Image (cartoon, rainbow, N blue to C red; front, side, top):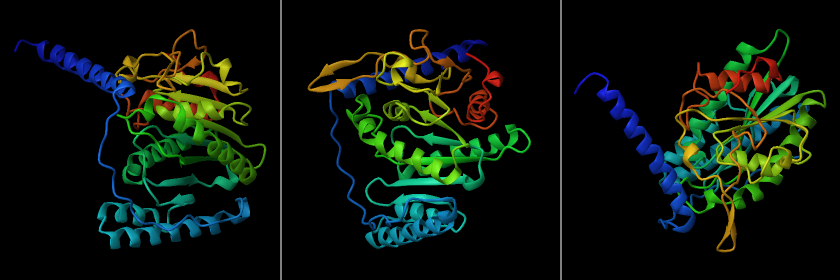
Length: 329
């Protein structure tokens, strides 16, 4: 094969792969896929705790770690070694769990940094196929962002990251991923989290929502009047709103998409179909939407929080409230 042919071939395969992913997701809108349901994994109901404050954080962390340890034992007794290991990792004494629910796919809210003393807090909202069984990749993104914030923050600025797996995410290949239904159900919980964070940190702390993929739909549904400074839509299929102004928020709205992200090929339409609204409307990185478009680099759909990437650097600057430092796409 002549020099250059291999590169062209790889690019062509990449385009086919991205288009195939888009077609598969689009097909899920009108061709529901059935799959055997995963057997329910037994786990305790979440511990009931009072609304968190700066003074109760350590006790709340300990309560949820204990729940995770209990869930791990129950999963092991059930014969699910993978979930048992995931829950056991959550129960490690180093983990700061603001919430934990081991039932079903699982929910968790984990804190990185000293939340009670933070001046800037970034909340990560994940997209499809995120649960306790796949939590490691979501946590890796939060850790990378926390490190980047530490490197970028001006002297004296204290930062924290909150990884919020606070809703039942849809499957990537499912009808649920093409409608706002899961996001509509998730939005009140995200609004409650923002209220909790302000109670813990105080009114002077600035919050940013960094919302990946379907998580951007969740953030959009929660955005109206929400007390956050910035909302970043990352690899977003759309929000369900025609414009950034349609989100009805005073927050700065950002949008970014990597050059190799297959989401580019998802049709940006919205229509009523079989009694549901399908699709999410205007492309968030388009001029028509009206967001501040940031440079998300050359990566793919899962690469936005890769260490050293342009996207991670810009997301950290957005979270730090430094719009002039953000490079634009």
